[in-house]
Image (cartoon, rainbow, N blue to C red; front, side, top):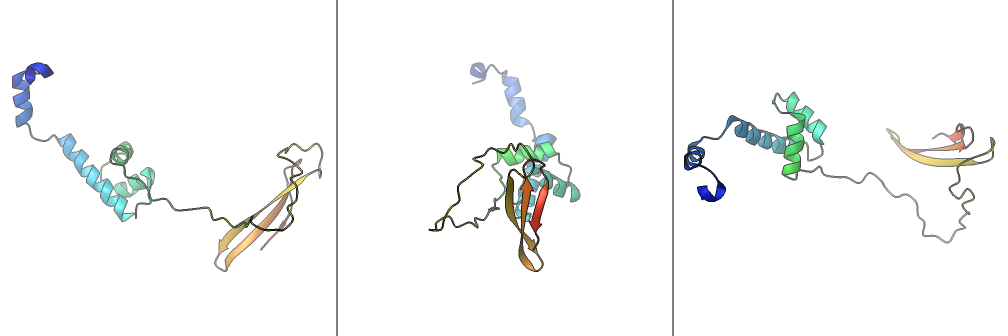
Amino acid sequence: MCRVLSVKPSSYYDWLSRDISDQQIHRNQSELLVRAAHSETRERYGVERLHAKLIEQGHDISLYMVRRIKEEHGIKCRRHKRFKVTTDSNHNKMVYPNVLDQQFDAKRPNESWVSDITYIWTNEGWLYLAGVKDLYTKELVGYEPP
């Protein structure tokens, strides 16, 4: 086997009798720490937040090592759905034509306005905010507060 691998027999026997290196011990401990911290954070922290948590706990581990351990062992964050569909497009009501047809270059003020609506969570519950913007001046023309 030594001849096939081009290794001296003395080197092979030296390798067999060696103890585990300090670097390997640190790597193994770091892996356990990353797995434990990942579980403690309910699998939601990314590399930076996980690294900050481990440093806060007093562990000596680099950001690079946390990243590498997560990649090597397939440790991934649990994802949650951020976007909730609030529009019901399945209806028989009239749909207005898209007059702008994705052409957002206005030639003069008040030629074309666009609007959007957003929902905001408050202590009182969900509130909405609607705004209207002039495409030429890029300024808010008006809004409807909650």
